[in-house]
Length: 313
Image (cartoon, rainbow, N blue to C red; front, side):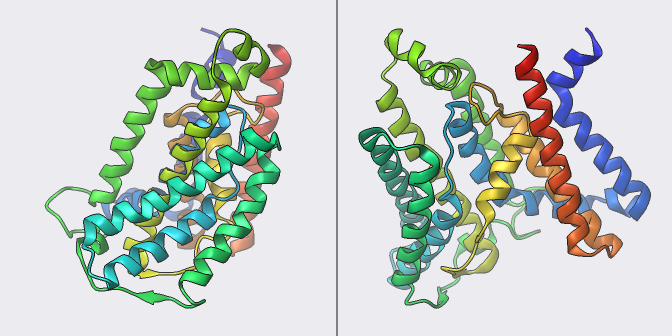
């Protein structure tokens, strides 16, 4: 196996190891303490959950800029349902369902109007954010405490890690299996690689896209559930710009903006890299602009590597 092949297959993991080793030397041995590693896992959970769904969109050659707004809408819906005594289970399903409805609208607009996903989801990003603010009357919504508040709380359960982290891991395994071992997953890769050829081979492209965008936004709704757990309130102003972190996680993890390439494992590694940079810079006392420069540089390097790989292909 050549060095080029190793970089192609394990580039994200190598990058994570290098970044972690760098901050381990800068911050010290406490950077790898169990409590700090758990903090990184909890910080990664929200972006990681949304990025799992975004992986499907990137694989199929699409994109969804509305996930940040969907996260905020989900927190608002969950808080409103809890205040009306619908119970935590129905509230959680309501938040995720609200996200799925937004994704269904994205998919229908993209396939029926034949408008590029970037433009459609840019518009729905504003529409959904406005809907969240309208439902919340432009303020935070307090909600009664339930077990939903403990999903990302350390030590709230007997499990070694918070339940929200295990939920991310479980759903990552499900989506990884879907992409790798099901007809739907193969169709998404085919659409992202060559949509015209996929259509000629009998793939129902429009149906796959609608289902895919609904799933992507459902995962954003699940990320909203974790965001609600972290804040304990419904906040229509939360997650502004988070869609860029979500997309960056997929790209750093080896996904290609041109479609046909991406893995769930790589996506989670990409999200973890950004968290390691954020926490490492914070614990070292470095200003926020340093974190942004480092993260931006890694994103540019990942995109350049993808372009080089595509050129060789």
